[in-house]
Image (cartoon, rainbow, N blue to C red; front, side, top):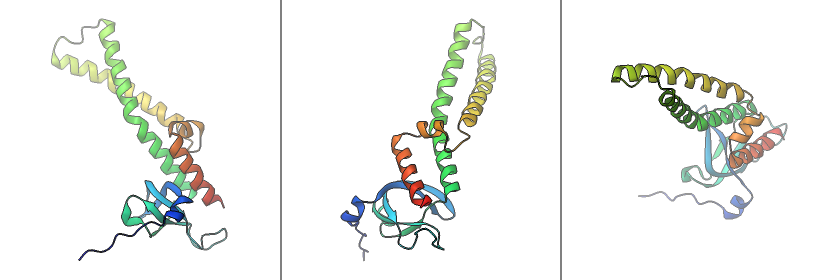
Length: 169
């Protein structure tokens, strides 16, 4: 026996918001592919926490359910974590490539044997990468700052602004 999959209301999905940060199991989760709109009873002055009715998108099991929206402070912190995580791997790869290129160009005899290669390579790359990561963390310290807004991308920035507007009401 199968249970029918809930279907989205196409009219409701047309005027809904796409993507957002929700509280699921006491954690803030970003659901990029859901379409939602504010739940009834979450108007300003309401005693309940702001919530959203999922009206479309993926995962399909959320369609028709009401999920609590992340609070403003949680929304800011979650967006900041998402942007930091998004750019951390590319920064590490580029920094490491630049460090090893600099070692090659420098003319140091660092590739004489495997042990020396590992010691000099990692001993140089790890501190430089740690420094660059610390700088990245420092310039993204303000969740609503210009760096986080620009580096997060247009689509996530739009989703963030829409959800923030709903929460500010």
